[in-house]
Image (tube, rainbow over all chains, first blue to last red; front, side, top):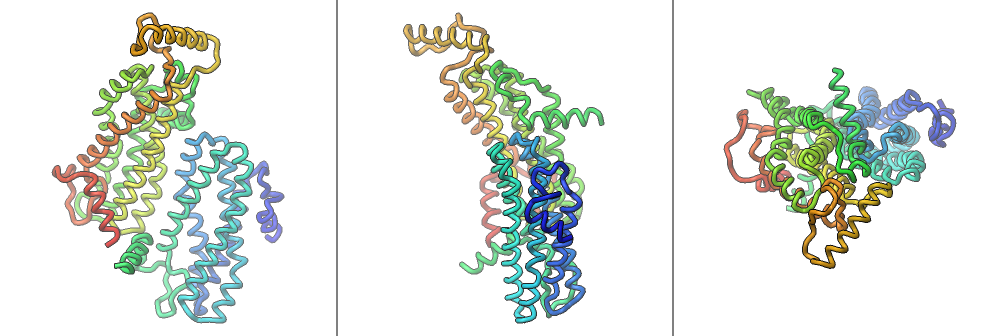
Length: 215
Length: 275
């Protein structure tokens, strides 16, 4: 396990950028394990075991479903850009980036637990998790850039492919995260996998918020 | 099954730009059957249409399945009907501007651009489907769909613009073509000595091999006029073919009564989103 994490973080061994075989299973396992660990920590707010388990399932789900939704577009965009020969490498890059993000999240889990232990403020917990997700996403970008560097030097159009992926991924991930609420779980609300009223739209909610604020 | 695989392979080659290589364009050749392009357009458009029509199904009620099916038919229809209406004028415009493509090749080029457009749109289908599953806001779905149509339309335009540029690019350094180009330039020079106004001459090589010298400007001019004509007709065609998504609280209709315009409706949706 630790050798795998080492390899992923340093892009060596099985996880080397030019490795002949793409370690799909290993990447997915790391993604699932890291995501579950962080999710479990995140859901442990108020020491509720069931919520912790649910959140543990939700974080890998968030990453995997978002990738699945964005994948057809990634494929077509790469083909259109004339980068089809590099598609396997590009996809390995985006998957490795997400595995890295999951591992980074797992490494941040103790901070979350420590914060829960030191304060019971729900708003603070939500904010902290948001910030840690952002940090982990940026860490994932390091791996993504590392995989994309040789591709871009081969063909600068890979820059466009990467930008399209990141944009669409974030657009979908924000909404999916919204749908998958609750992650932290408000102490006054029941523990549940999905919130009954959660099937709304993140962007509409944010727009309304701003609109109400300014009018 | 076999023919479907062949069709997908054709689309794949088209997306990879194998049908619009410079060497072929210089000789005004686009070697993909019109039938495959039309079929590919119908198939890809229908894929997106299914995701788009999902909103009506989830909302339930009378005619929701009918809405799904008609949307799947309407998306490809929107593009193909627009091309049917505009093709004669697009062809005349480009021929006047000095395009070397004959009518069938012009049609192939335009259909190819539409297929690229629809392929990208179809690839965004899962995203539309996902937002349809997770959102109830009708206004958001309208704005999202307009956004996706716009983005994929722009990519189709980039494809078309590239192909036109290739069509009007100076010939590649290959023996026969260079020779023709040289004679062309001489002919042009002689012409200019006589009369700077006249561009065409019966003594010139066959029209399929003519390479205009100010090619890039011509390419841009054709591209611009094509875009304007197609976009205006396309927007209105989309408006005529409504409903695509199916507004909540309205019964299923094959077509709605003619009223207002595309631009007014889009603006209203934008306003609704914020209030």
